[in-house]
Image 1 (cartoon, rainbow, N blue to C red):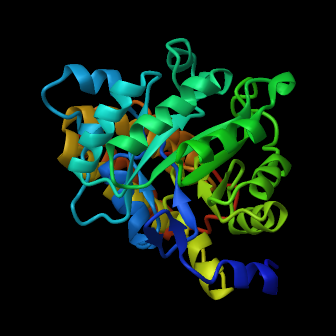
Image 2: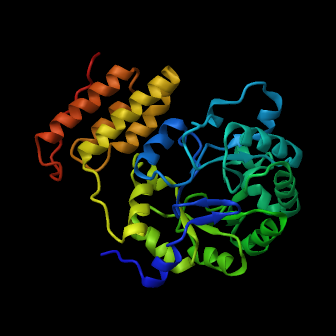
Length: 352
């Protein structure tokens, strides 16, 4: 049984203050490349209307050379609070991109200094900035000077186990003008392997005066509470736990505000959400949206009889109608059986 200690409940009772911006939720939806587009954010916000959302990370160099903003930077004027995340290693390009982000409607500008992917780090962006703290500091100072909204940073605890420099790095980001820092409790070398080392997040919290957000291994309400208790962080950011499960941010937020747990969605409800997600991606992006939806649909199809077969079929769907028919057929089967049983039933590929 998950419970909130009185000290944690008191600490989280007030809004999260990010510079001049007050956010009424201590639970944030992480920026996720290829995931947190407008469609996904709308689903998450349905269950967490007061939480901060983030766009996918946007390449500042790319923005410098284009005349039209990329679709991943598009935000709904009604979706507040919203942050646009940028990445690069050039302070001037990032400052220029930050101005565009604010013009697009960003309530904060977040600088990605934690992405471990090689194609990002080899060009000096993401977590490679942990090895270039002077450049990282110059970036924050340039962006802070360029915009009048809070500037935040998302990073990791270090490059490798032998290069854990998050304490010095975080302090430099605060001194440069960052108004909040999110710390993923892994090194770049770890990628997403092993356990997130929350103890380092707690050490960061001890030395900073700006809000510190804990990230890494937040897959449940229970994990979020344990993390907050252990680290003393000002909030948690949900990442991979929301893949195929846009309910998580809202579940954690509701518990932190009320001390009560929401009833989790049934497999049928999850598949109904998947169908809505698929339909919305088609309407927003056309055929490209169907291709992008394949991974989302496989994330939804877990934890019930026939899920493995359904995942395989959704992973190769070609059209909206085909995907909807597969999901509808799975929903019908689940509604007529005990989904907790391990029986497998056939979900033959539906021709449409």
